[in-house]
Length: 96
Image (cartoon, rainbow, N blue to C red; front, side):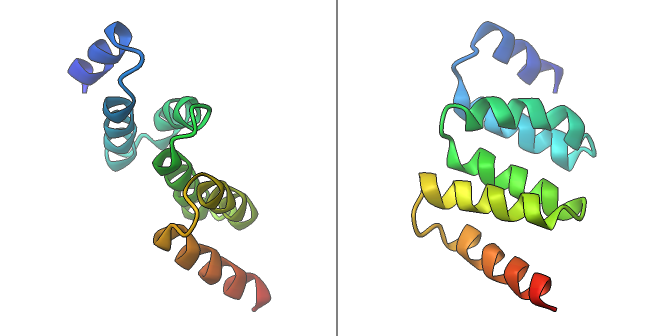
């Protein structure tokens, strides 16, 4: 992980590496450390970052926030099947 952080310090425009780094942070139980990385990518219109942010919202029970992020994914990547499926599930859960 330290290697990825150092690499990103030297190569801040390496978006694919930043996404991998953020994913590894989430998988390693450090979602709060991943959020700034994901927000930076989202500001650059990287749809997978928005998807990851939506999933983090879901994991914390912020279903309204999750819907907002999934809508952002669909704005960046219309027809994204994962975001479409998750929005459907979130809306069903909200209706229950």
